Image: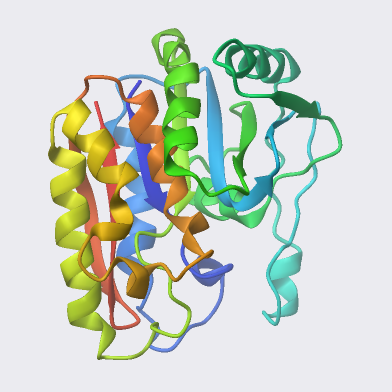
Length: 263
């Protein structure tokens, strides 16, 4: 299986009215067609969402995790969205074991549900909700090195038909959305990020470790708010030697937002 980094949009944006009405249409169409690019149906999915940070690696281990509607101020119907994907307790245990073997403390969380960074894009990518999913947390240290290590630790699961997805946003400065002045800023960072993703593995990893040195990096991901970029580190770590590429990009709310694929 490849590894993906996908944008999850703004809250439940794909399932409500927006202004302009077509703002998220291209992204929704991309997410809706992503599964058709896979070599086969995934046996399971590991989802790394920007909306779950812990002091140590955590994995969802419930049989049927509930949804966490962790967005605020949206229409009432968006708090009734459903995505009844099954969990995968045995896979969760294996993930925790692989992380521990790599020197990363890890634990299973039987009570943790699926946050909107998981279920919003998954409703478009795999709408039948019939593929088992395990969420893997980010670390609140926000250390890119550790997140690359976490990806490397679980990379072998790809050979078993397990799809690893990072869900975040390539640009995530809440003050920048809707501001035309951030268009060139997001373009500059996106061009750098694409170049980093497309580099050979060692250069790619070093670039991602040093991402703060990229042009306009902290304007696109303000200090202590880079959790929306870190899922990319995990999927890049899991990519091994596989080549990376940008597989989607669009201008939304005056900023450039992109998705990336490895393998």
